[in-house]
Length: 293
Image 1 (spheres, rainbow, N blue to C red):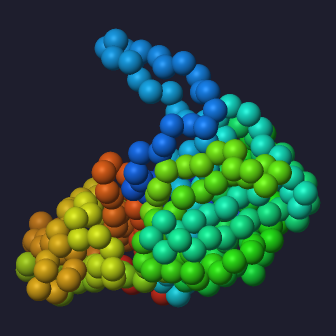
Image 2 (image 1 turned 90 degrees about the vertical axis):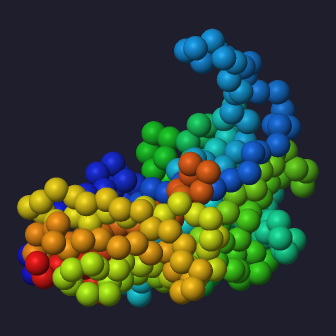
Image 3 (image 1 turned 30 degrees about the horizontal axis):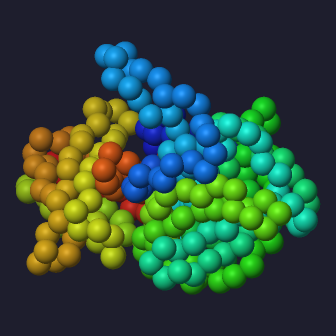
């Protein structure tokens, strides 16, 4: 097989986590509530407009996406402690994740006492790309070195993360009391859509299925060939087919096979970013886009 071009650049950096097919993705979120403790004072932006300091505890802006050869894609929650380290363990602190639509909750407790650092995302890998509970759930954080912390999970993973785009709130509890709480952010769990095509010449229709995702997403895509300039396009929701779709003119492209990515965004945040290759790894089960003219 010919070598495919790796075109996600900086996104591949997260793949040093050692996960299968990972990349960076940002999720839509509601504005978090004010921090429960006093945070740093507000500062001024370059144009003199006051800017709000980050909450002491909040969702990480860059979320983690994992995918597998069965074509499932999921994003995972992550949080950041801005001001102070946090103790977690069987007799100290824990995370609690709540599905704000159903009220279902999940407790996440490290198997040994740990200290989480500040201003570095804490990734929560609690389920696989298809949404099934992880065999070895863990927290991952990199401050100076990347650390992986095994955790015990109490509650139903499917009840909290069920549905395609569950809205989540995360709490940090210390000695049984809520110390911090985030706003609500959605993740994607078990999406299995692929970019598909209606033909290989002339006016070619490209689409991905909605599969329960919000209809008002911004959906953008890219076709990449190792010897040619990339081609970008936007897809819009077609109510008749319940797809996100667009049309490209194959005569404007050169003959060959193209790798692709698709990105779902909402309110300037990426909900999911996936494709036929990223992070230096090819997905043999995911077909490329073929152009015959």
